[in-house]
Image (cartoon, rainbow, N blue to C red; front, side, top):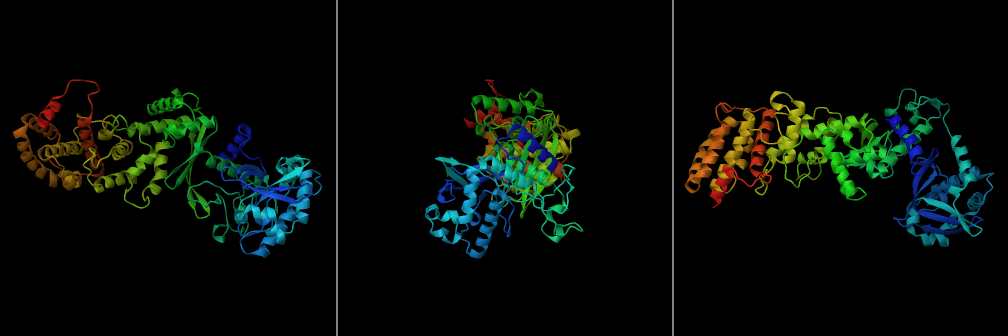
Amino acid sequence: MLDALARYYDQLLRDKPDEVAPFGWCSQRVAYVAELSAHGELLSIVPLADREAMTRTVPSQVKRAVNIAANFLCDNSTYLLGVDNRGKPDRTARCFAAASELHVRLLEGVDTPCARAIRLFFSTWQPRQALDFKAVIQAGEKLLSGGNIAFMVQSGGALLDPLDDAAIRDAWESAFAESDDSTKPMRCLVTGERAPIARLHPSIKGVYGAQSSGASLVSFNAPAFESYGHGGEQGRNAPVSERAAQAYTTALNYLLSDPRHHVRLGDTTVVYWSDGKDSENSWVFSYVMGMRTADEEEGSTDTSVFLDAAMKAIARGNYRDVEGIDPDATFYVMGLAPSAARLAVKFFLRSSFGQMLDNIGRHYRRSEMAHAPHERDHLTPYQLLREVENPKAKKPVVTPVLNAPLLRAILEDRPYPAALYTNALMRIRATQEDPNNHLRKVTRGRASIIRAYLIRNRGNGAYSEETLTMKLNEQRNETAYCLGRAFAILERIQEAANEKVTITNRYFNSASATPATVFPLLLRLSQSHLAKIERSSPRYASSLRRQLHEVLNEERVSSFPKRLSLDEQGDFMLGNIHQRNKWFEKTNGNESTSDEESAIDEAKE
């Protein structure tokens, strides 16, 4: 994983040199600009509004907890000015002294206007008088609370940036190359080379739920985590060279800052990238997985048309029809979750981009269900996970457990997690009846989960993709499926007789689990309901009676089972929604109506 990220860093340096920092440098937001005169006098401190705060490439910054360690040319007011509002003046004085020593030492011998001005500033600035200084007072209280400060130098009527001074950059890079404090080089686990080892790795920022200041992917800070004989050596317990550490952290921070390369799924931040045609592959991947929509992408209507066409091609298994992508490139998907001050890797997947698209297409074909014309053709992983959550819960309970297994199942074409299926059944049983929703307890999303699970995890015989269709399969004779259809018909009979629904509330759960205890009662009730319907609409009553007989004939249901297995319960629910969806299908432009439709019209009249 670290090797893949380090190689991606080299790829970014080659393809996007302006967007990532080279070795020895990093990207940081600068909240204030301290303007110095050529003689090192502080002229002003200019605060930058949040929307204008600059992200600058600055010298690599140290990792601080309670230790005192100064950064070069970019740091907060504690270090660069010797003032703050933390109420620890002695420590603040030591921080300024550390920054002064660092800048004077590194800039010694550098004879440029910027270098001379910064050396003079640290030699003459008096932190004790800083709070009375006009520039500090005008900057306000926020300056003392934090935020990075960068220097600018006025010289000869021009405003010079020390970060653009070639001599200063050379001085920093030379000092950085010699700054290793390890006793001896070690073999880097990422590159395989003997090199100075990073004791502390740079922080990773942008992972949902992690500390805003950043968290570590690799760290050792207690004896319980350290190897024998490496106590107190921190990063040397898992030797990664200074350059490899910066490479993988810079690459990961870039991915976490780019909306096209990451998305949140529950408590997991999903990051993805490609070895070849990275922008194109990641763009298409984020769309076909439902992680971004066409409306979120920049561009014209042509963008939406292209993405929709790509989605349909991939769902059909024709990913090579999508123009602009590189299906042979290696594609990576990683899931990160917070774990105190560290990051937990929930999964790391690697395969060719074409293979992942092929697996995604298989998933969408398995989970496809009939739906309304205005609905999206395929439900995203996020939508499927929402189907198994309790809508009344204050915070998600199931999603954090299932998001990683579900993504692995989709992207690697593995069996779906059994918990996804059982939770879908539980939500169907627990859901209260909604009279305004014709799908009732069995929603499209839950039915999609059931169908996909049965096909992939039980995919033979009765549960093959050819048999377990997305619409009603009138040729199926499996008892559980036919009982689900029969329950829908019995419910419709009661609707026609009483103009309200009651049997779903009272009997659905029992009918789907223990049919023998419920169906005899429901059939007796249906005879009374049919007699009532027959008085006002004999044709409709005859149509309903015929449908019920066809579904419950002896060839399909010879007897009512005492108990249905979990797989059969899912099949029951598919039969139920398939039968109900059949009644709500449009004739697709065919003006002729079926006998049943004519009977319904007669009943309404």
